[in-house]
Image 1 (cartoon, rainbow, N blue to C red):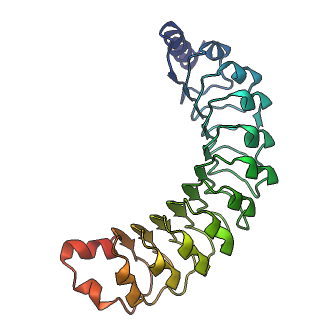
Image 2 (cartoon, helix red, strand yellow):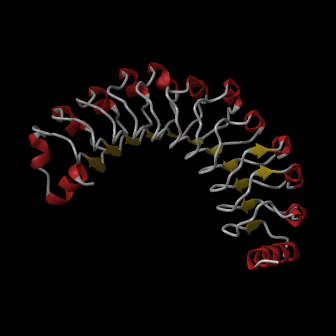
Image 3 (cartoon, helix red, strand yellow):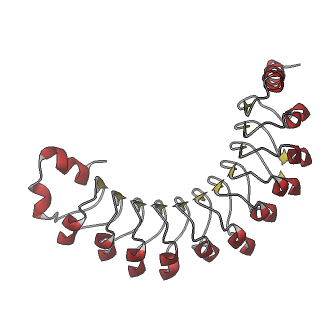
Length: 281
């Protein structure tokens, strides 16, 4: 038995003896989830990051108290339909795996509100994704999405949406449906313009637009009353509109790596510590 397996067995035994609610079996080079794990029916959180797992097995159904499952950094390609029987599972982390599609069974997990699918090879989202009506935190960055998945427009409870590092060129006007959004990350795409309807996201506090192909600052950005964090670095911008000074809630504005010839004079009239928030990186 390898040291990693011995380590895993010891952690599992300790968890069984203590009726643990959390178990961390990360970084142990496990090729499968040890069956003893599924006897710890008190588990609420299970960490299995950065192993060599390929399957989430049927036995997952035994963990009825499970609320968060993190299998990021593995090679997951099979997820048992039994996962949909977990009544309390609200967080599923599948970041940095080798998924090319999203298994339909994920859309049948009733209480799922946090789903991390970033750094995979996903090209599109299934129509059934619209069933995830409780979704609040959705990470899809670092995939190969060519178009904005319109099915996302049904997830009107979204608080955070990450679509960074894909191949998006356009953002639909209907993004205004996502009125609960606080954090939107569109960095690292091929975006050249934004829809004016973005102004209807009146709760938006954090917006990442860095590393795109914006040639001018969209006027709609000056119409976001609650915005506190705005990153428009690494674009092709040449001027900042005077109306930017109306963003009184702004705490951070990254302008680096652009071609600015004009920054509103009001910026220069700020105290040094206030100026930092406009040009820092």
